[in-house]
Length: 130
Image 1: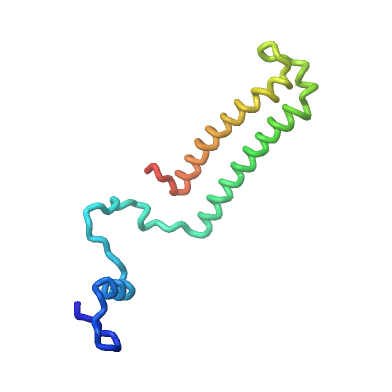
Image 2 (image 1 turned 60 degrees about the horizontal axis):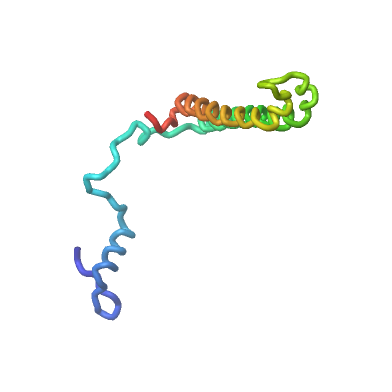
């Protein structure tokens, strides 16, 4: 690399020369620690595929939020009195949902969400596990 001179005739330091060179051309890494080539490197999702992916994602979230609402607000508050006519483990069912049942359902929703998102990501080719 030839030295670059400033207007006053002095030569800038090596760091300034490197900065000027990197501003002109892209950096290419030549080390051994590059990530392996993946089939994701050349894939680009079309606008329609992206919209379908997010539509499936939002439908799943809305469905799970509806279940969450039905269990927490519906079974634990709105329908607690009619559910108390039944018992589970010796406790009225409405009370059980308000105290413990909703927590079990919420944990199940987390696992269901993880499973379904994995399926959706595979269907649209954005799964990181491949």
